[in-house]
Image (tube, rainbow, N blue to C red):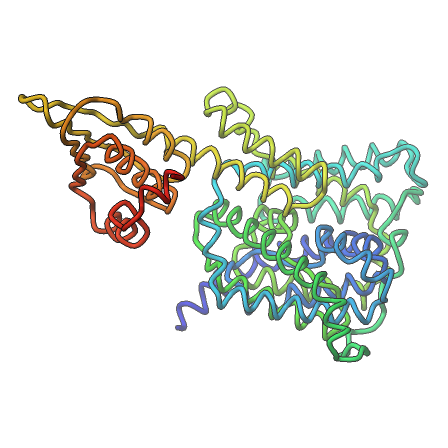
Length: 496
């Protein structure tokens, strides 16, 4: 147990603390921006980012992953806040947590194994594009405060980020970028947009807050649709991010524990006056690339965030947005799977369609759930079609010409059932047909119905039919649902 605690918390103290500081600085403008999107005070997003990071550090299933207020979740809150106010958002956050804990106990995190690599790649690429697009307003000439200085500072920031590691890796280059550019702006008095221009930073610690709403069925009817959406999107983004961090760190994580951890964190967040949150791929990548690996990096990110906005707010407000834009551009470049562009020439067309469709839907809708749903659906359809092709039926005629043996090889299910029936010659004048199923597997009732149809068609032509070789699993479903040996089966199935 001592060894486990050391690995989870104390195995990389210096790297985790420095990475946590970088993440905290990058979280501040994003939390404010997401609060604005949701239509709530900036402190709601900042408190949420603090509490999510701190709680998930203890309860989450993926060490080193950052959870906070996110844009995907904020978009789902807009209507609820507009029509019912902040108090209903807080109680919806509590219910979101409960639903996520329930998902953890139902082991829904295990469903991630059904998400193909092409969907994950599409998800990653789409997020990289969205992260980059989110920086464009800070680089647009039409935005107030954006002058040529912004472009110079951003370019200088990217130069520091990518060149400093060649000189030293003792301090994360994103942290150096933020400190240096902030010092330059303050010393030279350059008039550019800063974190302080994003919104007013809170000057007090969060306090326990029970939502002031009536706890009745009417309230439940109002918040349940929002909470369900928040729970699904939050878990989807968190589990996908966990999978990506698993790959980056070459380690595994407990997805079902992550579901429960996200739920506990959201309940804590709702009780501290924060909005619902989930894992953030951008901040998680910053954490990993800055040297963060253990739970300490996540915990320190939350604590540093609160200390900075409450006790060092005047200094934090001076950070130029250009510095944070440079960091986020680094994240988008590092997150995008450039190898996937090369793989477009090598991978099957179906794999490319799944990946590209996931990217297009996520970028077009800004909704991760839609993109992943489309990707998983397409992947399932292509897989079913591919498996359906691995099936054939060979036949042989006995020496006396009276018995035809059909040997079925492959998988019979809803996608291959029609082709299964087409393999048989029902008009051939033979006395007996033997259908050898020792190399076949029947998966569903559609397959059983196809077997019924084949048997009954032969019998209608006066041919005796014998089934042999059914494996145990296939025999179970055939015995339960088949009708070819039941009275009046021919009339029922053939419509006579």
